[in-house]
Image (cartoon, rainbow, N blue to C red; front, side, top):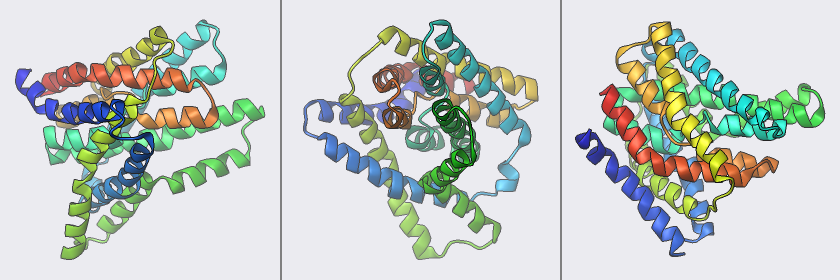
Length: 306
C-alpha cells in the first residue's frame, strides 16, 4: 500500500499546491475560473477525443459493466436521498445530497490519474463510468429539480436536457472521438501530436485547478457534508464492488470501476448547486472533505484492487 500511496501522492501534491496558491491569494478566483475553463473546454476535451478516437469501443463496451455501475449508483443515490428526507430536509436538497453522494471527479481527477496508475487500458472503463454519470445521473438531477419546481416534467425539460448534453464538451469530445474511431482511420500525424500536446496539459492544470477552487470554500453543516463524503468514498465503491460480483463483472474492468467509484465528489456538483441555488455551501464542504480524505481512501482502494 505504501508503494501505491507514493504513486498517488504526486497527484494530490499538485492539488495541494493549487490549494496553497489559492489560500495565499497568489492564484485569484478569476484565474482559477479561467484555468478551469481552459481544462474543461480545451485540454481535457483534447485528451478525451484522443483517447476515444484510438479506442475500440466494441471491445470495451459491456452491458453487465454498465448495468452493475448504474444499479450500484442508483442504490447509493436512494440511500443518501432517503437519509436526507428522514431529516425532513426539502426534496430539492435531498436530490442534491444524493447527487453529491454518487458523482465523483472522474473527468478532472479520475481519467488522468487512473490511466497513469492502472494503465492505458483503464481509459475505456473510466469513459463508460463518465458516460453513465453525465447522461443518466446528471440528466436525472435536471429532470427532478425542474419537475419539482414546475410541478411536472414536460417537453421543455427534455429540451433543457438535450441542450445541456450538447453543450458539454466532455460528452461532445468523447462522442466525436468514437465516431472517428468507427471509421477505422488513424488520426493524421500532426493532429495526433496536437491532441497529445494539448491533452498533456489536462492533468497538471486540472489538479491545480481543483486545489485552487477548494481554497475558496468555507465549511457549512460539516456533519451532513461528512456523511455525504462517507457515502461517496466508502458506500459507493462498496456498492459497486457488490454489483460487480452480482453481475459477474470481474478482473481488470471491475477494479477500474471500483476505483472510479472511490473518487471524491466532483466539482461540477457545486456548480449545479450554485446554479439552482440549492445548498451550495453544503455541497462545497462535501467536496472539500471528500477530496482531503481521498488521499487515503483512493490509495486504499487502488491498493486493494491491485
